[in-house]
Length: 65
Image: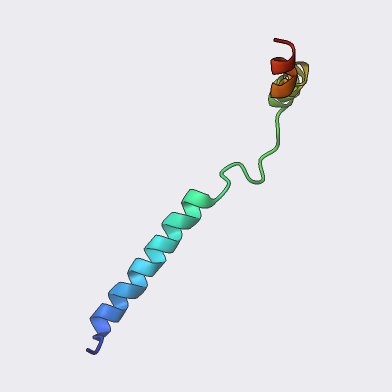
């Protein structure tokens, strides 16, 4: 079965569209943007609050029962 010129052109168009959609979906929309001071402050606060809490080892919990 031979591929016609029109089929080849359609295939190339579809490949380009699929590539464009995947590139858009997988790219980082924030690339190149600077982090503003307010976001940085909230982010650091979030990280510090997580340091206060930690998971307890299951063995330690069961040993204390």
